[in-house]
Each structure stands twice: as structure tokens, then as C-alpha cells.
Length: 536
Image (cartoon, rainbow, N blue to C red; front, side):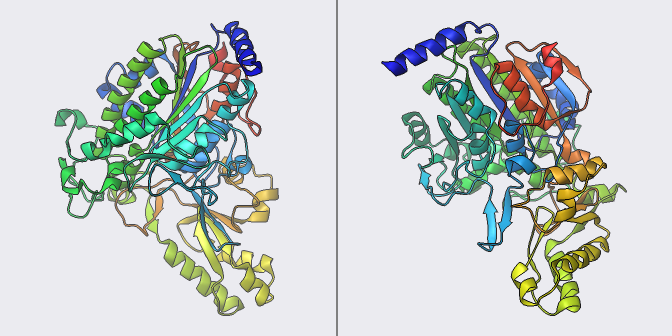
């Protein structure tokens, strides 16, 4: 009885603000979406997808990430917490933990188990040290709001949906199911289990991936047959069409096709209906992370026809989803924001061919170089425990055993690093933690530093330089350069006016903006600023 009265009171109070607060907030993250994809592909988009959001919403044209490394885990965390890795603690997709002697995934949680699948289920949001905007919505409404996260990748669902959502669901590469973990529930809700029974991944992989539109539309891309791309699978080739049926039993292949975006759209639509999101005046929150854009981008690079086709297909998915929201929630009753978790560099080999600054290095070679240099100085040994996220973790046990001054080992490591042309800057952790940098690029290094999780030495690569450990085709992201930091921020829907601005804004401004639009508390570590253009 008391709970029923509480819910009724919340509904009555929230009704007073019904004209100001949306019934449903939809947070869309497009993995690896560079800002220039908007201008390059705009004329090829349909009226109802990206163009609807851009033309009828508010576009922030000069939005950037304000830390490094620019990767998926930190990107999602920064969007939804309103702060940088220095505060929310997600310093990479993975980082090295000396105490266990291995890399640790940003959502890894070995106290949990998979639900609904066979792999990739030992995850939770426990590694996120700040509350998220979705957490704050739940806290404000005494957990009577509904929050659902949907993504191809575990981190794309787990981090945005916060610490106590209604549910978080992602794709199991082995079983082809949408899954969750025991952190959230001991079994899948019926609507997710029913979706899994339809075997949509098998259907998608029975198809051919060909160009969506006439080939003349793809004039923003380079020739399809070029030396800068990786194959989807050995023998698949690098040109359209792709015969996916040849690999139909390999359910992990789905992530390298645009049809995973269809999957995320379909599951999100089921979530809206089954969980009755937006059905009353207590605001609900749906987070959607489209990851095919990232996996395909890694394989083929930003100038490829494959990437352009993926965005043209995503445009159709967005159009269908927005129409669905119009019909289900009501045109004036929902709010959408769309952004990206990072950008990507052009393929360095392509840049080099066209006389642009670029290059490759090899982390295995770098580790050997450092070990050799330190061994000559201080005696034989494996001085480097790990290199990850452009951070070097020294072997502290060996340093103690040989009774070497840690500061001298750090100085020598930096000296060796800076002797390499592909290293732009290098600093020890004490300098990053304590110095007052004025250079914006070095401030980004500080914003990505966590004194408990980061390495002993942090460095910045030269522009358009990639680690070639996995080959010299395709691309990556991680740097402070604009190709990795410049992303779109779009707000659309209830209470959002049309417009755009070129004022510089930060990725950490999204969550504080939502807090003020929803009239709820800021996430606990938020230090971004509300996007004032939306409040004029």
C-alpha cells in the first residue's frame, strides 16, 4: 500500500512538469562516428534519420573529447557520467593490474556469470566509480523510472545503463543470443528470451551484404578494391558483394556487418514495448549503442565504401526507430541525444601514399627496445610488465629485487621512448598527477590518468601513427588528435529547439545538460557544463 501511494505521489508531482519533462530519454552512441561523416554523407541520408535529427534538432558542430585514450569504454563512461577517466575510473577498454599479472576488462566482474548465453557474461558496472545520469534518474524517482541498456558490446550496454537498471543486454558472439549477467538477474525477461528464439543473427548471416544504393552514390569513398582494407574472414575478399552465407555458422561474424545495427534497433523496440518505457509521466531512459560502425571501421577505414554503406543503412534504422517512437510514445513526448564514443584516424598507409603525416610502430618491438635498454643500464631482466593504452607498467618486483631507484628507471624509460620518432611526448605518473599543464593536449593526458589504475609512464603518439601488431590495413583510435576527438553531439525532441553552433563543447557536457533538462541531480563526479544553447 505504501509503495502504491509513493508511486501515485511521484506521478502526481511529475505531472506538474509533464510539459517540461520527456516521458522517455533515448541516449544513442554511434561507435567510432567521426564528425565529418555528417558532412560527407549528409546528402545521401534520408529525411527521417540523421537528417531529421540534424535539421529538426540542435547540432553541436565543434564537440570534442577532452582526455585520452579515446576508446569505447571511457567514451561511454564519460558521456553518461559527465566526467573524465580521472574521476570515473574507466581508463581504457582494458588496463593492466600488477597484482593479478594480467589485463583487466573495464566491465569485468568475476563474481557474476552469463545469463542467456555461453560467453561474455562475467560483467557488471562495478568498475565505474561515479554515478551515471541513468543512476541519478533512478535515484530521483526512487527507482520507479525504468532504465534499459542495449548494445552489441557488453560495455556499451553495461556502462550507460548505470549501477541498478531495469536491465542491460548485449550480444553473445558464440551463441548469437542477447544476454545479460547475474549482476542484473538470474534469468532473461520473457521478451528477450522470445527474441532469441527467433534466431535473427542466423537470418542476417544467410544474406548477402551488397551496396544499399547505386554505386554512384558512394563518391565520397575511395575505390572499393584497394590495399588499405582487411578481409571480413580469410577468403571473403575486400569488395562488394559479401557472401555472408558462406560463414553462416560463425555467429561472431555478425559484428562486422551492418546487420548488428538492425539487431540493436529491433531489441530496443521490443524493450520499449515490453518494459512500457515512456508509458507514464515518470521519465524512463533507453540507451542504445550501435557498434557495427566501429568493427567495420577498424576493418576497412574511414574512406571505405563499407563504412559509408554502414552509415547509409544505419540512417534507415534510425528513421524506422524514430517513426516507431512517434507512434508509440508521441512526437512531443521523447528526447533523443546522439553522439559517439570516439572517432578514428585515416589508414596510415593511405595517408602515407598521399604524402600526409603518418606512420606505424610495433608495441612488441617497443617492449623489447625498452627491456634491452633498461637491461644494459640496470642488469638483465624483464623490466616492462605491460604496454597498454600508451601507458607503460614497470616491473616493480624486479626493481625492488635489484635495488634500483624507481625514479631513475622511469627517467631512463622516458629517455628511450623519446628517442623514437613516433613518440611525441612522455611523462612519468608523478608529473602527470602533480604538474599544472597549460598545453591542452597534455591536459587531456591528465584527464585520462587514474592514480590507482594507470601505468608508471604515459606517452603520446605522433599524429596518424598506429600500432601495426595486427597489420597495416584498417584503422584504430586512442589519440588526442582531432580525428579521434571530434564527434557530433545532437539533441532532438521534446523541448529542443532547432539550431546549431560552432562553440567548442566537451563530451562531458552531455550528462549535466540532461540533468538540467530533467531537473534531477548531476552525476556524482560530473564536471562538464550544461549546453547553454538548449536553455535560451
